[in-house]
Image 1 (cartoon, rainbow, N blue to C red):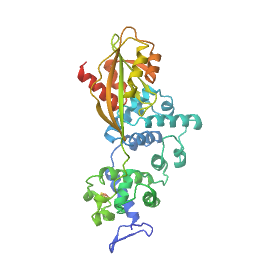
Image 2 (image 1 turned 90 degrees about the vertical axis):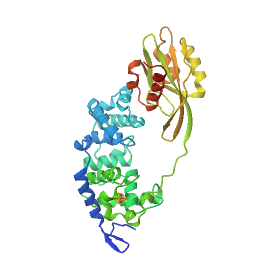
Image 3 (image 1 turned 60 degrees about the vertical axis):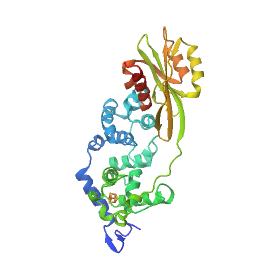
Image 4 (image 1 turned 135 degrees about the vertical axis):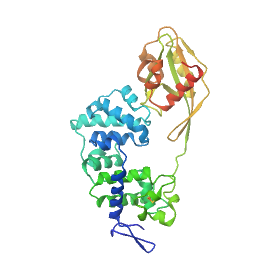
Length: 375
Ligand code: SF4
């Protein structure tokens, strides 16, 4: 077993690189090749916090331009705390997993309310911020305040399981603790905890990829037990899969043709709760919803389009689009929104509908409507 406890690694009778040199080689490589990211070049805690939260589960190519716009419009924790739902939804559009934005704002509100706007400076302090788990807390505390806290996520589990040649049980329980111990040992031996956390992360993204790692370019290949044993493709073992849940939903697009507008609001409940978009209901609740709308306005439903497929985490969705054109004067916005399960609803020009909605599901619904009737 690879252990850094004695500052060296014995493997198959060959003396291998010491734990300290794994960290040193990683740092040397990182400082030579690191990707320029806006929150790396200016690592103020607020920026690192936003950047780290945005880049969880979203690729950096998508994150970087949105990060720039986000911090330009909401440059500090007070601006974020006071940001309205619809604006937050617009700034988060394209990043997915909107709950992260909601938690980010909740965290900012807590900092303003309970800490006079001062961001925490310790790992434990960050852990107390809503939406800030051990990984994010460790990353911010190490990068911004030099804390020796290892940030362990899926990338790090993959790299560590290959360095240690772990072919089973790494995702939870004892295996996960072993990986955390390994990362902690690396952390104890470095004078640059923030850079080391980012180096392991970047190695996982750029070199030690899930499929087809480029071991020939790896700065720690001489310490890699999986490479030496020829078992790289077996480390780590696959994650245990959650069973997918099938859902049938209807995207309800309410338009007012006389003014050329469409109703957009914050969904109150369901699996896209708190995201900004069109009303979204279970398909089996369509009839009741239509009755509620018909009691408020003269409405002409179009025939729903063919269902399209969409996936959100473990939900396998069959979505259909129901367009409701409201005739005459539009009823009071609040009553219509109530009937559709929307908060903070607003009529937006049809031409701006895509930029007003946050989720890819809404985007697909719009695409289907426009394909049916361009314009
Ligand atoms: S040698 Fe290959 S498998 Fe091992 S850590 Fe480097 S990239 Fe990953």
